[in-house]
Length: 332
Image (cartoon, rainbow, N blue to C red):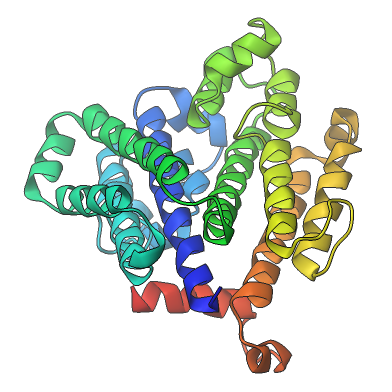
């Protein structure tokens, strides 16, 4: 498969997943204690923190203008936010256009339809009057679209690149949501439910833990669950399986650095105990995890997107992955 096609499929999938995660984060933040100062013990909203949009918000609007309504608008629609919901849908649509022959007619029509809706005045008016309904529409679209993707395209190499984008984005957001817990040593039940809801995991958690909601169980569930599709372990296992499906190598071996790093991180997580995480510190553990995830993303890019001459060239300035992300934001 051409590197540019793999690139567009990965980012198309990432932007769809990102839009869903953003919508769920801000919807939860609007309605419960997730936005309280005791949750984060910091001067910014958890929705911005988990979305990775703190710096963009500060540069665009400044801390002085921070309020719930402004944060919601910034995450949903603002042109000053390179990762707003509206921008993510636009980027997803543009990447879909670039690989039109790789996706189904149903996918293309649905992506176009929702792109036109999100940039319309009608969407803005709905958000102002009933923000819950707007966020739910975004979430439902993204889930519908992922269902269309899995049901209407060939499960070949292209589909595997779609999965890589989906799980790279998902594992990043879950790690950020877990990290919101580090600021308080004793989060209450409402705060823990907020964290689970931000991952759409409250119902699954109740099934697995029979309603015993405490910090240890919530962190263990989001990190180690074998069956919850947004847990760190589940996402890493999907990444590992998908990378090996693309390369044709059997699991447990590796043919490139992306496979080696993913397998190594999955094995490390499998042999990590909750007590060792508390000893290290939750924030420090998640910080190291995010660093490893960024490196996996960079190695996937270098393995499947960069052409050989670019791959062999020495890095100049910012790391290649950072340069690539900046180029994506500038070009789309």
